[in-house]
Length: 135
Image (cartoon, rainbow, N blue to C red; front, side):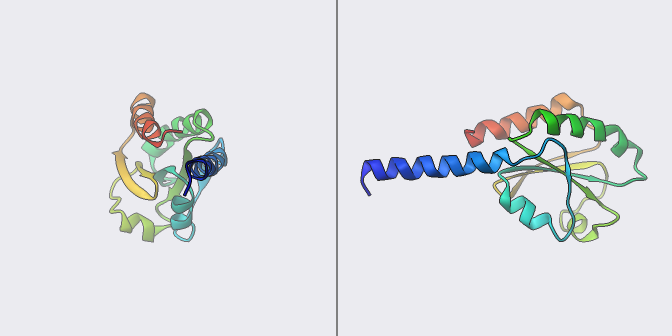
């Protein structure tokens, strides 16, 4: 492969990644046992918020997640997975306490935050993974 062709291929891959990232909505999306794997596979950086309607701490964290989804739109996909309605994924990742945030980068689980975390802590974790994506 000539150098020009190689540069074109690199640019094409970079553009594809940028386009993928730009599809991240400005609010969390609901995912399920059925849509989980595909959602993780199709997005470079994903936060999964494991929650339940009856969980008080989950309700405290929810507005923080909503705000972060707006601020990181196009960079991070924020999702919500109701543990009562989706026991398979919940069990697969051994989620025993909620709220739990799982962070996936390039389809791999890279971090976990259990309990209500301050916005600054979540941002710090996100920024460390975003910088490694070179986007």
